[in-house]
Image 1 (cartoon, rainbow, N blue to C red):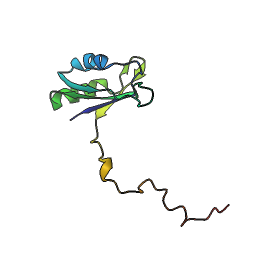
Image 2: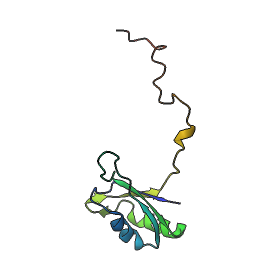
Image 3: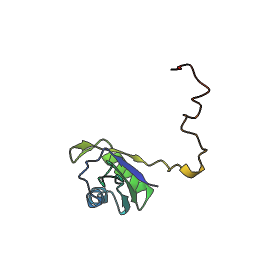
Length: 104
């Protein structure tokens, strides 16, 4: 299981997150995604802890808490969707010719 941590300050580091979550147990892993173009943190992270009990304690304590000037959003992370198996054209824009109500 993994914890989603949202509404993070853009100045937060992986080490900051490790220290904050270490109060609730052993932190196994921290992922702090960055923007591909700017390299800046994207404002959210994923934290994995040693046990589900420790993760739940961290969620209960930190969800809604103010940290580094921001109100955190902390919950169980949803499984990542497999984008490679999605059918082509699933973005919904492929039928523009069939629906010609707005002709120019």
